[in-house]
Image (cartoon, rainbow, N blue to C red; front, side, top):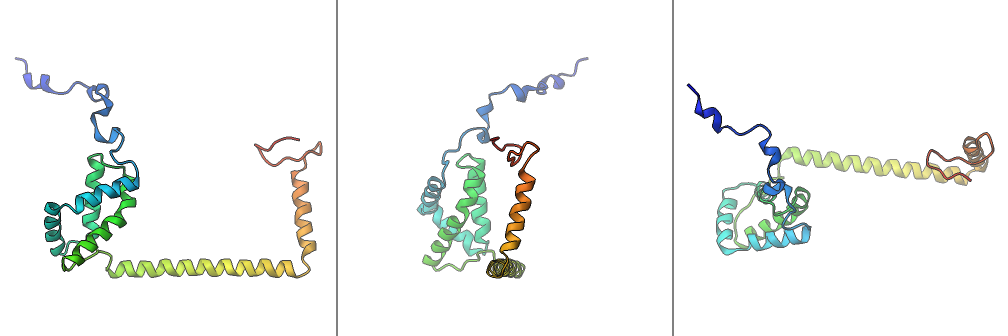
Length: 181
């Protein structure tokens, strides 16, 4: 007796022989630039039918970042734009949502009010300040070296570099792709 269910299964390798443009992610996006994608979101979000439902979702205290992220991910999956264009559109989408909520007198929750996020931001600020101070210190050291009688130090560095770049036949070499004289 033959089991007929086995004959209904896909043939091995069948997915490799189908037309590659059958999938949305294998075709060019509908809106390839950020400007075009932002215009798409403006038209979508300012549609009256869509706006009322969106304001209901915002009133439920769902973070605007989550709403914006789900909007852009859905657009990526349907081929409206690429992932990178969607990520660049996120701040604009959030600003549109904030403006909609404020104009409609709806309380909203952005989603970045978390204490952990604030601590991370302060850590980032501290790191930037430390880098800036480090750069300032290095700048001061360079200036003090150049103002002091450090011309001998600079000349010694140049002499060492010249000796390293000279090869056996006294031609300058600067590396693998350097032009030979």
